[in-house]
Length: 116
Image (cartoon, rainbow, N blue to C red; front, top):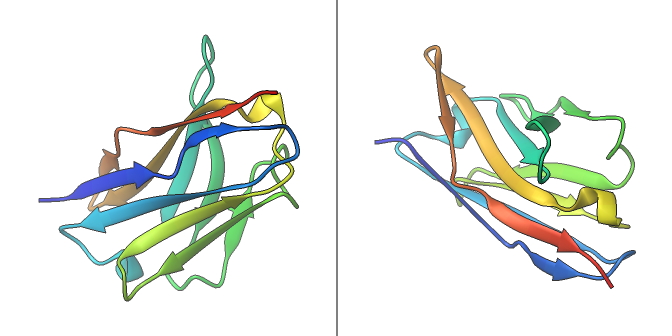
């Protein structure tokens, strides 16, 4: 059974950093591209970052480029999102996502609040 469980969210001051984790089970993360999305209150869910199957290719939304880093630890079957220089505009629920054989899988999300 495929499961994705996000963690690491919380309250952080502007300019601060957080690292989100996405623990996967039921499939090897090393075999699939994986993504982070986020959804701010009252807004649509938006793409944040993607890591390819090999891990060599990483794509980012323009709004987070040079501040966020997506990575993966195959030995822990976990994906990460390192977020630096956070701003209030980064406040969102963050979700991890993968597509396996045409089916989309999502975690329940972890809330990141950036506020002083």
